Image (tube, rainbow, N blue to C red; front, side, top):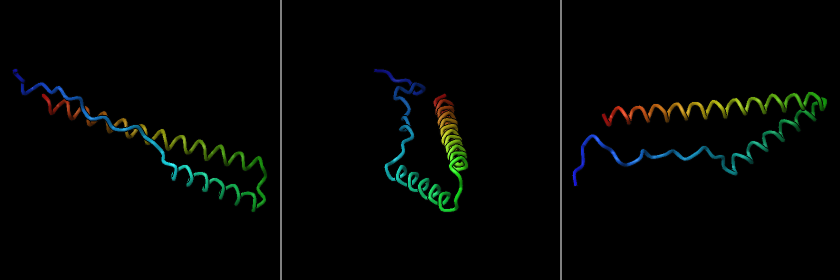
Amino acid sequence: MSHDAGQHTDPPPKRPPLQFSLATLLAVTTGLAMLFGALNWMGISTQAGAIVLIVVALSALAAVGLVVAIASARDDGEDEERMSDER
């Protein structure tokens, strides 16, 4: 059997997909309940509460998108680094 030093047959390790735990879900639910409870206590109208919900949802989507973009950019950088090391 001949092995060339330049060839690498093992695939690079894959990072597990982003996952959220039950504790995270509970924390988010509790935070939203406290937010809407405070809005109700201050006498904010239902329409204003809906606007707050939309803003919070869009902010959460933007944060998740940013985390995914950073994670994929970091993975791409690691892949490029591995490829240059193999050369």
